[in-house]
Picture 1 (cartoon, rainbow, N blue to C red):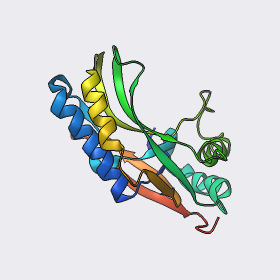
Picture 2: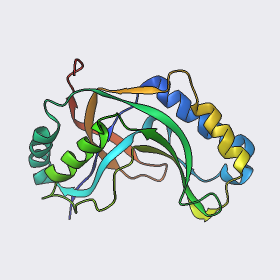
Picture 3: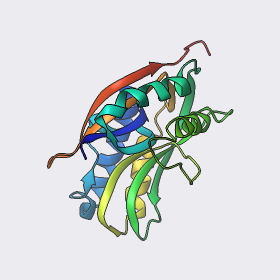
Picture 4: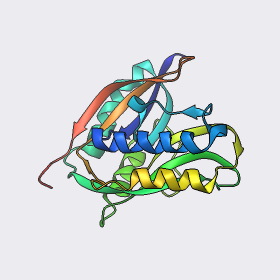
Length: 195
């Protein structure tokens, strides 16, 4: 079956991407065994709201319409960088996330739930609670991450401008290549900046 691998995400401002990139560099500097793992390219750092998988070509326009209803008229909101986290644990780490504190009114979680409901005809519903995060690296097989490396990543993320303004949501396509995925915007919805 032909189709488009799709996901809905929040793009990040340059200063946040710079902090995330610095956190990754700090881990690689202090944990040599992590240098050759699958690091997310700088241009691909984002907060995923919903991964849909393969959507048939002829249904992509309907997907855009469904998402329009879920994200139109949303108010802009702010997240705050919280720090780096090993998933599921530091001893058997398979991923390192940069985590975020949601807005006081759970704006990001509510947006994710709205997106999940809107795409019910395209993907399985989410069963886990939504936690805003960015994946920095995926390990080929789980192994330990040194506490000093995690601490260095957290220092890099403790930037003065830890608040992230969320001004839009984007539907991306993802094309898998040997050098990593290539993301392209399919549609983007701007939020009300005066919300």
